[in-house]
Figure 1: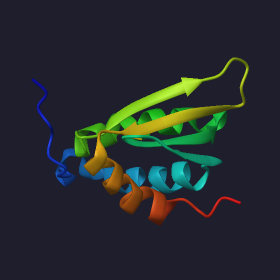
Figure 2: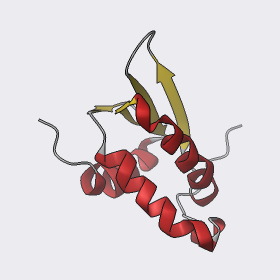
Figure 3: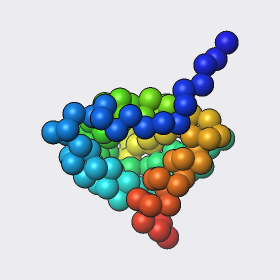
Length: 109
């Protein structure tokens, strides 16, 4: 039996001293997205390899605040980019679109 985690952010789960840095990391990561791929239950973002540590740090805090997210990182052999997956189901996908895709990612041409 699968228990769904409600889509409810726990804003005080991120230590107060880290909250401003977490917002800055969000803008840095999603501002650097090279490509957005919609998946059945979320999104996959292509990022330059230089953003890997920033993404790992962001995930370490974001998982506390938003426990309903599932995260994944995929590398192709010898690639200069990686794919960062953020998903969790149909409702989570809508949340990602509204809060991240529509607000933080610049238009990709």
